Image (cartoon, rainbow, N blue to C red; front, side, top):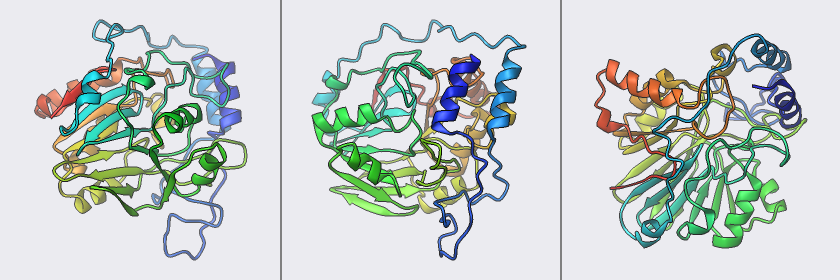
Length: 346
């Protein structure tokens, strides 16, 4: 990882989380006078000094290779024809990173969509795509719903959201505090949710559920907007989308509240160095524990193979996940290990 681009990105997008939140008298303990906070009292995010230590450490070691391996389908082109024709089957298509197209009960749902070349506040600097989006934005079916987990640049990509709004006019679901920015950017239908809020979108039930993460896009907005995950309930299938999170006890609570999660879309990448990333990102071991806590039938891994954000090789997360499935004697058929651009129909 190169020092200068990432330091600039951290200064601008403010992944320094050291500003404390002050609890208020709200009946909701994740609300504060300044915004929002995680409920885990052990949550200790890293600050700018840790960013410097991480990057300086990288100057004196050889980082893992990020060259694509044979199983990466760089030549795969999903033209979207089958997706546009599908009106009834449940399907999942991995676009890349945390972006998944879910087809459920005839509705088309996108999670944390990003088609931009970089996940950054500026177009000329910051983490650049290593793999292209699996489906061109113009080849998508009519998009009905977009769910956004939080406002970091690799999850709330404004150019992509504006393009989706211009083409498809979907309903955008976001955590509290995020609607203002999106409306100012010209989006037309934005719904804000607090943790455990429920909205009915025709035949679907959209539930906003907790995660352990943080928010911030600028110098003064640490924790000002809410982060979270989604449980999307259809007539026959229920899908959980985690967005971005570290491992926390909330997975068990979500699993208890939603006893029938058919597919859990869970992040497995961006976890090294562990001393730095553990408060905000899961590694494959954590993810498999979260999968167990949720009681989901199937696991669809995301958040790897797209952007070079951390120190592990891009192909490492899936290798470790498969190895852990084997060592823990978990049926490998329960892992929906999509390649970028691949669709799976049920």
